[in-house]
Image (cartoon, rainbow, N blue to C red; front, side):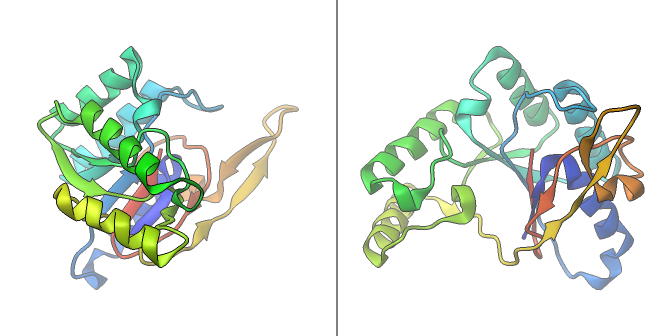
Length: 207
């Protein structure tokens, strides 16, 4: 799977399209949608550009949603746009806590809280991705939560390769802004911001 900063997603998408002949199958997934404004683009502008790129190439994705980032009028509007575009929603917990640092019962409650937020959307699907890709620091906690997921009909949205896209310093006028090096080849979207990480055989992006 590919795990990347959502803002650098288009770079990876471009590379994927250019090299599709080498792949048998790829799944594009995106983590942590939010309505935060970035230095170079508004939240709505960023969202519109990414959806346009997906639609242009007839691609579907799973949006792994951290509920606390979209439980607002603007956040729900974002989810509605993605729902109307036919994109899927997956569970990424409500507060995005590290499972290695949270009791199992609290983590289960956080997962169900996220599900309650997403369940009304017709494209919600029971696929779960662990925040920070942490699946428990003991065999007992790992197995307990996997049993919970199984009992609630969830599959795990795994990531198989971890890599990163570096960022570079750029100085328009007198300001220094961090932007990804991928901006040079992002020909689907005109401006992006952020860092990419975790490239794998099935794509996973962070907003």
